[in-house]
Length: 302
Image 1 (cartoon, rainbow, N blue to C red):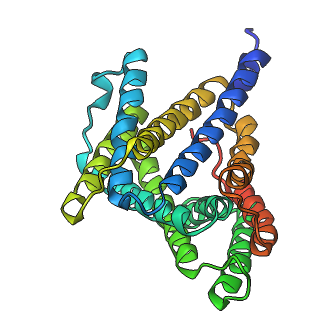
Image 2 (cartoon, helix red, strand yellow; image 1 turned 30 degrees about the vertical axis):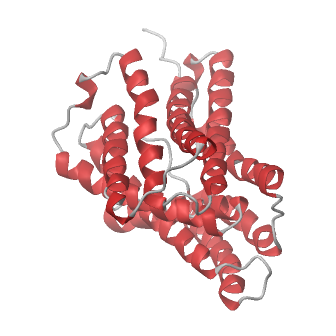
């Protein structure tokens, strides 16, 4: 009688898991640096132009990564073009609202609001995909929504000095759009679509969406502005690649806690580059949102 097969996480050496965690940490830093570039551009460059550069420049490292994996160009084939279009439109809209949120709110607060997406994803997966809503996930959703209320109500009432009603609304819209896009990603992966195709066509559609704003006027950036636009795309593309590589070396359960480093990076970088100090709303709501997002997060995909 043959011995039972070891569990999957036992097949991975400890050094591989450490590498996966390191890659995940650097991916969160790359995402935070992308936010710094977007905020540093301010209103000097139209939002659509920022989205175009973020997506078009990110195609370069993404294409190089797919070629390195041997998935270029075969990995870009798809039998579900309409499914990709729906996912890309929601994702591109989320990119517009996310960048607008970063412009209007301190970097840490904009990042914290983005972590409402796992809470929204849990609700949408239950309503649209029929996924089980366990007691743990219900508790996570409740905490996340409580954190959102704690942050939003003072902002709408104008009580706290860091209140920004429009920025908060756009942050909430970003969370809903991101959750909707992730639901569509789940559907595509269940139908056999590859991760490379999903990421590549998202970047293409988002770049076209940003390019469509050209008739409303683009600004010709100076050397510093152009460098920030290019850095936005490179940081975003690199962050996705590092995140993908991290899951090849470590289990999702081992990586999940490190995802939330993005908020700490945002607090640190926001203070260093923009002298932003988190306000009372962030300090009260942040722990509720992050704990709720961690508890409600989806499990490891099959």
